[in-house]
Length: 216
Length: 213
Image 1 (spheres, rainbow over the protein chains, first blue to last red):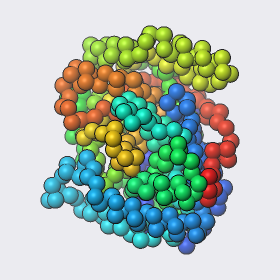
Image 2 (spheres, each protein chain N blue to C red; image 1 turned 60 degrees about the vertical axis):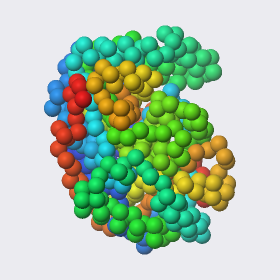
Image 3 (cartoon, rainbow over the protein chains, first blue to last red; image 1 turned 90 degrees about the vertical axis):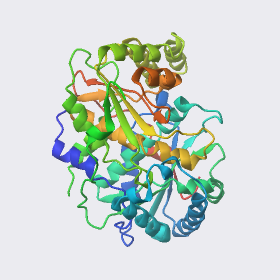
Image 4 (cartoon, chains in turn green, purple; image 1 turned 180 degrees about the horizontal axis):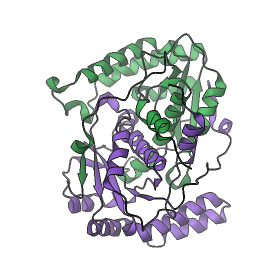
């Protein structure tokens, strides 16, 4: 098959993390979510394991409860340092990043209004002493499917954003939704139609700055 | 923008893990890799961190050394045994995957390009799931975008992780600093033909739960 790169490159470069431009008024039919999930699970998994499970929440009360848990989780997150927290000095934090953080605050306040929340899960957890190979296989068996899902949404006029913070309250969510203990919640993806569909590629440093050929 | 779903759905559903159909004889120009990496880094990262870097290896000597690490990471018969076991369980698709992995292991050094996506900073195995998910969620979407971009241009690849059992050895070969974590190894080549089909998957309703488990 010959691909029309104008189409496919546009999909890969304009699928942004959408928060403020999620249309909170427009409902999302279940068929669209199912269709995008069908495409999502065409992604590969380690040793063809396909241990993914998809929690989808469109019930308003349940969404409100998840939003409450999410805001608690945001507070938990503040007490944890992530590896990239210290990679840049304050002066280096770009206007782009400031916008991202501002947008994340908006999402936290409005999550209960987002019509659909998707929690991608996998059955089983990495061993406590898992090395990088095992972690890469575990996360490498769900993240491509999640991104495929987000790309499929974008192609249909919907937007979403990958969030991980809810995981700080994984037990609370498991209790709320009846998710078994051996099922790992990998992310929380708010989903809605977008206000307008004209998204642009993001500004990025030249690829030559971050590519090493044959040696570091 | 209106997308042509015939095009975009085909891309998202026919980008397979390609091993035996990698064309080992056709060279891959560096410009194609760079183009696909430009598309790849449009993917999102946690906190807009963009801590990724991409090691690309097209030197034959280095590829041979890395392929040695890959091949010896597991027992020589591992994939064959797994393939047979899966066939015995009646899992034909999985059996084929292992058989194909076995072939790749033997032929890795012949694949024209290796790409090792990396992130600055290490994933601590003790970190809670949300931290792990942020780290891996900041590189795997870009990696999958890269694979999709390759597919759109007639190339194929497969996400492999075996070499990570010998990560330090490979870091030594390539002169990489300790605080850079290798996340995968993608062998990249043009594919033999470009007619790939969607994989058979169980119906989505069997793996979806609405509003409760």
